[in-house]
Image 1: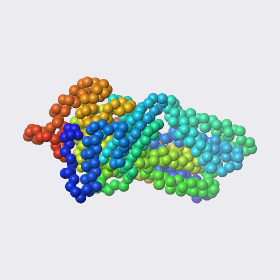
Image 2: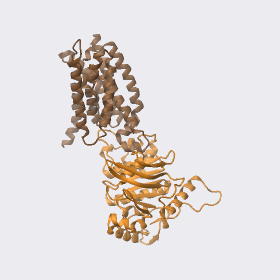
Image 3: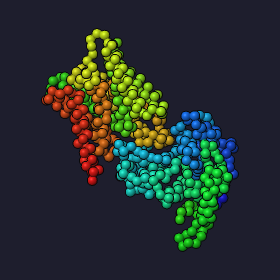
Length: 299
Length: 265
């Protein structure tokens, strides 16, 4: 499903009914529509969660990022896609303030709460740490908040387990719970699928889409596979050291630059996929156009 | 065990064990054992310079260990030589420079053995004041830094993304390490100082479910080892510092053995 099909999360605003929550979601919708037309190079909007302009970064004589512009607005899911070694993780680290770019600037909304799910999370086995403790690490969180965050990702049974005993998929959920317990305005996920099988991957992205709808946070998602994140993305940015193309998922999938980077099969696979999934089926098998609030389940 | 020198050895050793325990956990978690080793061995230069210019030894050791820590942080930015090679290199260079400096000192020849392995029975009242003053400062810093350092040890990028000033806290950690090394060198010498940091923490790991438990168990093991090691030393007339270190090793083996047996099955 692409931007055109998405139903507004709230009804149309009526006069005198502008609660902050409404406005946030509506802005997100408006941003989604604007992004659809490709708006890189346009002046910065005021309500962006994070906004970077002209990012240039080189290390050891190699230019890893060149003139990269990127924004994430509230309640928007932006997917960053590109081949291995295209600088996706580097860009994420710049946006998060972990790396300093050689040129360009990153503006974060004042006091922006960020939840981060890094690509590879390896906690040294010498640190004894329960899941509950890990989720609450670095901030105050009540036991109820921790349990709620774990329940949200289906990992409540892991509460008392040692972090070192978890499987890759379990650890992934726990890291997501840690991001959620911070009530982030921006969730950043860097290929959060290591050690997770295909079904688990699709399920994870569906979960992220649902949480976005419920909580209205912005999401920056890094993926190597447009196919699987497509249904959840409002906007896709294709990166290969520079921004190759960007727009709604469908337009990026048809873009010649995308085909050049990922091969023509990738575009065809997306087309096929789109055909199957621009509607969903209820349990009886009857087609039903666009699910209003719950994202579609992957079959 | 009521001789005054024995009481001072016991009080000094236990104070050091208490202070070193939480820091030792971070050294283990952050894989900085060899960083500590390089810093500790550079302490010999500080001792030699302190003796040559009649300075306070703890202070001169602290200055040198801080300088070497800074040098190590600077050198670790290059990526062509792996970090363990770099640390070994600095440790050996520091030891060589320390021995040469010591050999050049005029006047009463300093006893190298004392500074390589320490003399816990030579702790004076003044030393004890240094240990407790420096120790209290260190302990306060450790409690203050515990949460951010733990977050950084668990995952540095995650901590940075969530707003922890990682470089700042890592710098303070190195400062703390230099402080504890400066205090410990007098007691266990430049070659055994790191044992006080990593051995209690390693012994505590198999028994711990939380980071705090590990720090507390490490403190208990460290203090018990000091008491038992001194008892052994007096009973069998063995050197003090090495006896304590041997006790620490015994605690580690006893603690880790059950999990070794579990792994085999």
